[in-house]
Length: 85
Image (cartoon, rainbow, N blue to C red; front, side, top):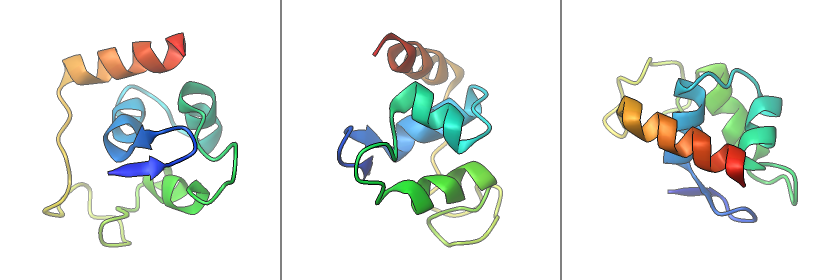
């Protein structure tokens, strides 16, 4: 699902960056450019960073059915692509 329409950033890309070590909204803004244009994705992205699952609105540690498990190779590729952009 696309989270940041302005920068065409998906939920999967954000999760991959978090898995690769992004720990704050600022990290995701630097890596992916989220919430820098219109800012409408900011609250959703912040929930993802803080550990709350946007799919259900509470911290569930990925227990929701819509949670996506990212493989380590996906994390590396997304992190490299984000940094190259």
